[in-house]
Image (cartoon, rainbow, N blue to C red):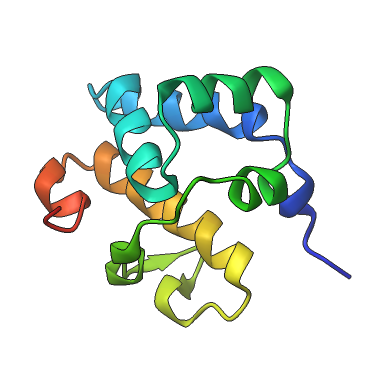
Length: 116
């Protein structure tokens, strides 16, 4: 049985990411920057993903290109080390969560984007 998070729409979690960073005086633009860095989507592609209501499985399947430096993302999210998550889709979702958390914590963008 697959995890129910895979079926959640990107449009349902995106505003939660934005709210999380805005509470810490950061911006939607920063959320967009890290998501685009991770997935290869551009701003129009993100808007389409939101407007079309695609689920997270489709969001990552249709992503133009997962950043080759994504494997440099490390840390603990939901009690698991992201670098040790075996399911590729779950790992990609947790990469995105980690990046948004780093924005909210005020980490420098050059560090968040793994020097690229």
